[in-house]
Image (cartoon, rainbow, N blue to C red; front, side, top):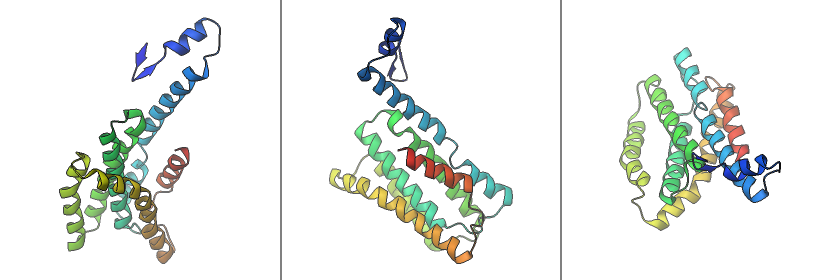
Length: 189
């Protein structure tokens, strides 16, 4: 019985015989199930932030650069996983997080009118480069360097938002629930 790349035969066979499944059977099963649970949970991580912005029709206190850097980080991580041919359970959350992050950046741009020229340049540069990166059409050494840098990108994506919170003495429209889910997801990995 194979479902979503998970082989249940070993575990179910042991249970039918009245035995606890062996470790070499149980650990891959648990790993796959946890992977798919993370993918499922990731489908709503950015939703509270999106809904808060739409409800208040404001991006007060949000750092555009912080959200743009998240998009870059998710793009690099997803491209690397696709290029390496990893199973969907190992990287599926990145696809959903990238889609939500792109929607979030678009909403931030919409409510940040007028959008400055440098913002448009960053957006156009991303649109020009992202398809090449996602297709894996870059030098393998550069690909490895980009993947190695994605942790720094995510770290530095937090700095502009932290600074904005500190400067404003307020979190503005930043969603606590989205921040909490991001932190929980990071701890779970």
